[in-house]
Every structure is written in structure tokens, then in C-alpha cells.
Image 1 (tube, helix red, strand yellow):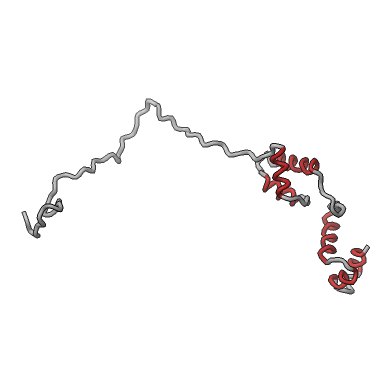
Image 2: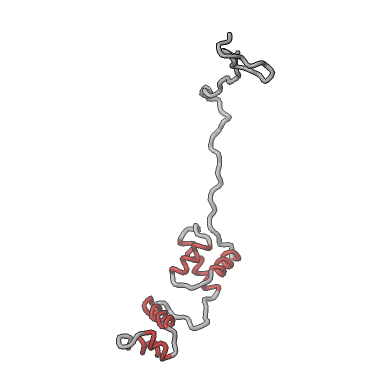
Length: 152
């Protein structure tokens, strides 16, 4: 009754002022307006969706997305459908009823190295062992005396 009067007279007086006078909160008025526009049925104060009804919604969403969603995405879908429910409750219900997202397939190596086909030559198998030193001072050791430039 109060919300209807506020809606009818909001052109004459500001909503916040009329809410103060009638003793209701402006957020309550705007939530009422939002519920009326969306067409969602309004649950009585303190009422909540039963676990069985919520589980039916969860299973419908899970089947609709072919089992790809886990509890975070299912929870967001429930919110998008206008069902106000806590994420912990969705997580608990999905866990207790064994509803979970499909997991990724395990990585399987598809190469078969036990075959008789010819193998390409390994071009990187080079010999990196040092040869005989060439030039002056090319291979000096800590015990050999330093050589001067122009040595033979």
C-alpha cells in the first residue's frame, strides 16, 4: 500500500522524502519496483527456495550446458535466472548429489617410436672436442709461462 502511494505521487515529491515520511527504506521501494517489472514472483519475507527445488534448477542448468559447468558458473546462471541463492549452498548441494563439471581429457602421447621406418640423420650430433692448439698462446695452462706476441 505504501509503495503504491509512493509510486503514484513520485512526480510531486521525491521518493526519498516520501519514504522517510512513510517509514520505509528507498532501497526497499526500488527493489519492489524492480520485482514488479521483472515479473518474478515475490517470495514472502524470510522464505527461501527449498533444497529440492533448487536442486531441480541446478540439474536443469547442468543438463542444458551438457555438464560443462561447475558450481561457480551454475551459481552465476541461477543468479541470471533471478534465483537469489548463496554460492556455498550451491556448492554443497552439487557436491552431496555428485553433480560436477566434466573434466578435461588426459593428455595421451600419440607418437609410436617403435617402428621400422627410416629415421632422418641427426644434424646436431657434431663433435665439439677441441683439436690441437694453433697459434701463439692459444692453449695456455696456469703452469706454462706466458708467451709474448710474435712467438713461433
